[in-house]
Image (cartoon, rainbow, N blue to C red; front, side, top):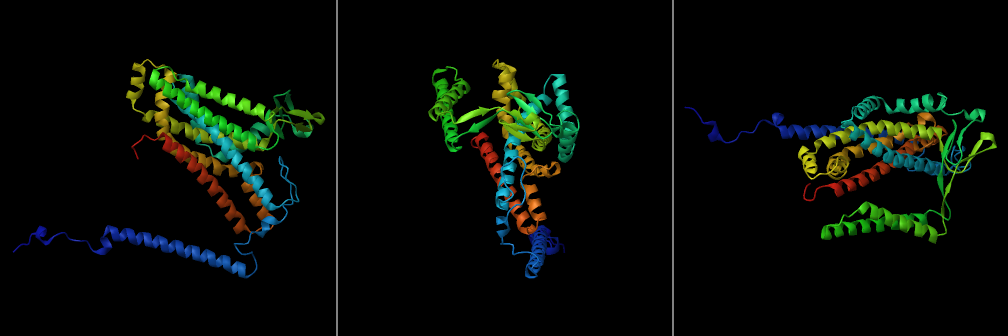
Length: 402
């Protein structure tokens, strides 16, 4: 007599072959391994604390001790605390991140568009640029720009010989400092920032009003021109009302090139770091933008052509807005990489958060607390960057789509 397997109902495999059991078991093994590893590390740390080799991990009193050194390009004095020095380093890291993200976004988008250009020269240049910088380590790029371009190429006069390039009112440069026109703010930063924010809000409101006028009457909105005009008007009125708190200062050489006065002064190491990070990261963003543009349905461009839109307007109004929905998430990863790669400044002796932390540890500060604090600093900067890019991504998302 034969038995029909279907009559016996579904058969469960033995537990050592059950996929769900194997998955749970694998995850349990990983969790146990991680717990054991952290327990061993903690016991090792606690043993060193008990032996008096290092202070407890909750002791951050070392930050109140004097730093004992000055930082080039800052007003920090050796008698100030390590906390003050770390604050200077964090501010510099944030400055590199903000300026670098802005510049690399502009350059990356332009290169990504050029990669798809019908102009052979533009497309070839963009392709060669991307292939060279994308396949070169960022540290090599930074060191090459610092040593090969700025210091040893003869492009900049040697500061040791008291030499400098000077374009009166526009530029002074040598192997120590590069200075360009900058802004001088009197009476604090709060009032000028308030004016800028008010001008931005009014510009946005005016732009939306012009779009509503276009929807109701058909009159061209020209929202950018109206919004820009409103921004400039509010900014100028606010500037006059505050008595001109923001003035433009220009760089000038002093003592036959020994020093520079006025303007926005940048260390050559900072310029090399910034240029290197921008050139390297822009090569990745260019590929992201290229792929995002190619992901837009071809019918969108053809429909825009049928409406008689010129190439530039098609790109700006039809293609790029749809491509950015695809491009922003991977671009956010590149922004985070740029922020974290700013720690490579240590290779060109530019003092930022990582360099300050390394110097503090080298002078006897506990490494666990110091580098743990550095991890938290980079984590906070990364989370803020991710939050901003996620907000932009949500604003560009198509309503109703997850």
